[in-house]
Image (cartoon, rainbow, N blue to C red; front, side):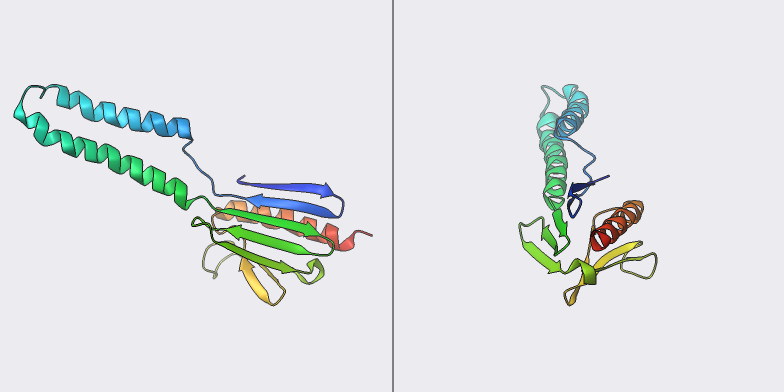
Length: 164
């Protein structure tokens, strides 16, 4: 699961969400190397001919294009959502891929956690309502992950509200 929910004390917890990245840095190197090798092998037959110089820029452009696309995907997925939960306050901090920060807070006794199975902007739309606003939680998660997160957060909010 691309989130971690930690109970710090019986009356406080921390939730951290991040997008799932399927390609680790080592895998990135392997993919780029394999593509470069796959493009270089046919070009070996053209060594010493003028055709090599005609095809070499296109092979280089293909490798660069793949590198740029994967690198851009990593930058676009550099999103973090952190939530601090306690008996007195729920605080959500969303750091976007561009570094912009959005924050939301509310009293946990008035927070409503909603999961809209269909009819929302996405399947299994997860929102928090409170403090006069409604915010989406885990927009980058898959629908099954949002369902699991909804259950975990529901249990946690009930525990925080009822802890004596």
